[in-house]
Length: 197
Image (tube, rainbow, N blue to C red):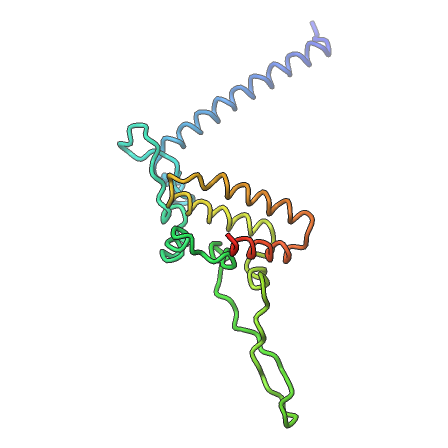
């Protein structure tokens, strides 16, 4: 006895539903296992994956663990973390929070004609605003990455203060402005706003 097309479709749908349920259960089990894990497994270490920073450490008895900034962001220098904690971190240095940050290139020189007609090299005037920041944070994606690190460090150092909500709203504001204005102007706004605050 052969099956009709409707019976085949019903059987296929039931098989697909069972496969999705099995995958969902496997994913839930995997998520629970990762949440319990406090340190990297041998495979994670081999692949270079970090430990789960939100996992409860052994003996935590279900309490939420304290997040250690130096573990969450090992690339940050201690003096940078301290500046953020004291609310003294310069807004034009936001790019220095990125893992990809490298020292700024040497200051540019201008070639000018001297009084006797000979060529002289003079240091170029620093460009006001955020154009130096533009080199380190060339787009909204890099800004968002650096800003999230800034938020993480600041909130971790001031757990009792409701910092994250205000900083998230500010990031949303920057994203909104970036849809309308050139990125260099957005960075100028960022630097001016942070200095005024």
